[in-house]
Length: 201
Image (cartoon, rainbow, N blue to C red):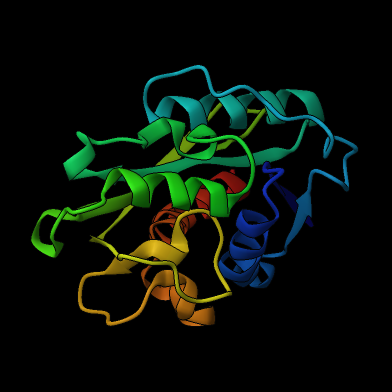
């Protein structure tokens, strides 16, 4: 039995990764979280300018600390009318709650029409095997636009104000259907083949 550590302190992310990566149980993989290894009170820095570099940094640290194959991600929202902000600073865009961050972003887009509210969510995933030093990396992107007000109750972060292309509702209003199209779902599924290869050695 192989253990894959999901390296995130964000409970929303953890739930999504567990739902998506549960398929690995058929490969003899058990999913563990940071609480299982006593690291749930530690928030790692994200010092780099790209999602991929931050994900790789966190996955490598967790792998070294625990001796387990570790997965980590960095993700965020890029809004065209804001020149790509908040980007890698999405989780730190405003102090307080996710709702506070949504409120700030919506305020910055006051008066901006729908055709200029285009945006995308990006997620970079890295999985590191401490035994071999091998790293698997993948990225997922979902295009959409920023709504004028938040809707839905099942998401987190900027989900309540992001409407994916082809949808009439926000990611937060999609429930479990979100996993099929979300940036995190796409990145995790793109990494699956590489993770299976790491497990098999």
